[in-house]
Length: 212
Length: 333
Image 1: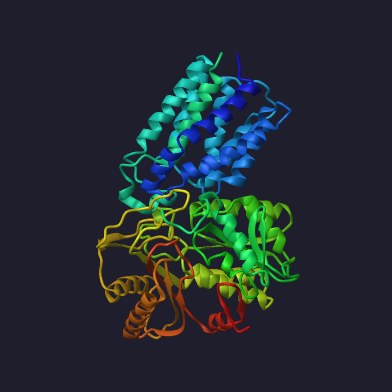
Image 2: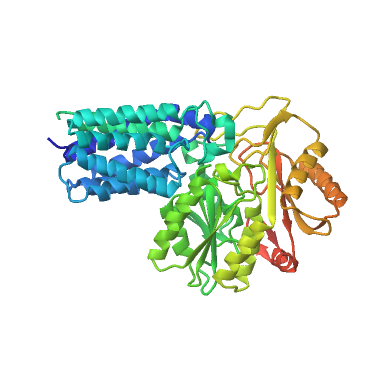
């Protein structure tokens, strides 16, 4: 059984709630190695997303993700705006024409998203960025799809992989973004972008695995 | 947090409303999306110069909009880059058919948002060239970081490119001039105190009573090292020698010396800094031909200073001296 439009809407709403609930936490992580605004900016962006999503009438998954992307790009600013905008733009183009998403579709879409984020942000795995949570999640999804496990199982593995990737950023030396100016002082801190990306995977699991 | 604000989320909008109220003789302000533009824009046949970045660095960039400098400035939230739709709207509003130069400070967010905006503007048939400023010598390991940050040179590039655009020079030349200013300019800053982003409510970093951060970034990014507070003369020695050795500036070079306040440092201290810089450069045989002393690229209420040196030639001197009429810089008019 695949994921339909209503589940995609609850994924977006769930991400907005998760970002709001973790606003201070994300901002605190960013204060340690960046400029203390990640939670604030993502929360402002996702708050702007919700009314736009609720106003949609045509039940199109691709259109939904495109709407999220455009709202984030125009409200978040910083690096997170274009980068999360890129994530949702790729989800949108990858899922074009689909009214139901299977595990393999989602795996392909997340992989396309992380590829585009790497291209735009010029970040490699291990640079201590959101890529470190998203890439393992995408790879776990693809492996799960290849194995033919259930959707719920595949999503759970993606969340676990994102979580592991996020925690693995703690000892890393930041090589991209503002944290990179800290050099060795960036070590010992969890990357805020990897953390919000883990939240993204976690809310996808919560919304998509429901009833599947 | 003690600030002269109403609500943290209203600071940028209310600042823009204040700018509109104060400077309507020279600028127009758009509140949706946010940008400040020259009152007479678009100037037909003239290259438009557009910059932008997070708010909290005033007067940069909005205070530099006007004849002889920027055609438009796009302010983001405090310390957060502006968004592509905003930059696109400003670019379209000031485009006079001769192309638009984007002057972008080297920060990941600014680069990404300006790149997206330039892509969109090109789709709309507007010729855009982007030049990135990255003059902060405090960033040593630029291969393994996001690279040197754009700081004080940005102000000088905006003035000089604005003058060249005003003189009718084509886009390619104005962009080349911007690259030349960036290539010949170097900066480094230091902080005595932290700053507080209104939405965050608490200081960005902690600095002890007897400590200073050498090589601070304009968003409170850490610099090269934290050390015990020293005298103004000693601090200038550290900043100026690092800058001079980096380019390097040599004996008989002609320079523009820019002593900048970070927002919380009074002019009396900036002149103490300038005095030390003047002596330091004389000692190295470097001639100060032009100077700028004041708070032009700030970091909210941070106390501290940054020094920028720009190697001059006759062309740069002429463009620096050309008339400018903006809320933040004004001469020759």
